[in-house]
Image (cartoon, rainbow, N blue to C red; front, side, top):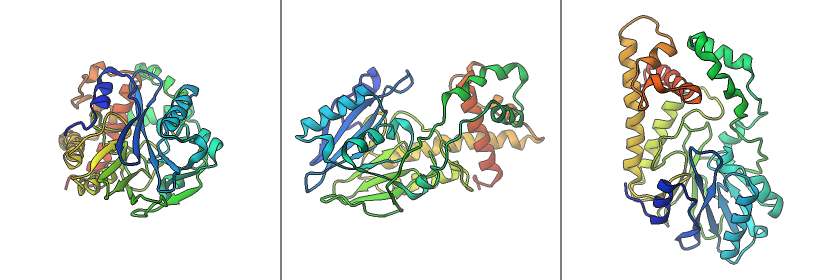
Length: 329
């Protein structure tokens, strides 16, 4: 894997938001600031169609400063927000589609998502303390550790209550003059995540499906019959079939060797599943808490607290279910 943008690569280390830069003819990337200290920015992409219209992939987190930066980027292209024709989301998390409603209000642009992501966009309910306690009971979390998990419910719903104008299906070509942009269904991170493939330009807009510096979380939006890990592994194989496409991710930096990075993601998760399988093979009916405490974590299990510990437990439950369903066979 090799970075194809020196500025984005440097920004991924320093935390500075990368400036507008051209990727191909009529394709630009723009860094968009994010709150908090975990991930400093997302990457949104601006496409100018053959008629001069603008199409935005994942406009990013909503804030006055980000809106001003987007308007400045459009001005640098000789355009304005009024020229935006469509807002395309790889998925509906706020760090990707938070600014969608503001853009639509300024332009009347249509919001486009995969039909499965749209179907998961029903009424958004804030989790309650009772919901959390029931989950902690199921996982057999010790009582003395539970207070550190309770602030999690104040984080708010992960998905946006977003109005959706157009839905697309797998391998459907989007209506953007001068582009051959095709929806590629890649569930796993969310139930309806999609990548966008442009074979003529050899580009793959990967959202949070394939990232250069992080292993994205799974099952973070909606619920389906399949295990998110199984979905994700199948989805990785789909994008790995395009090894000559440059990856344009939602975070980090542009890079080559899309297939190689997809395979690294797959091995990362399969290694965890094999580890869970070894614990289960020892017999008994260990709880999620017991299984997690016997796995290897980069920070050390004893050092995981609060949201990080909660995330580890979620992952453990997902991998246990994947193993029990025969995912390793």
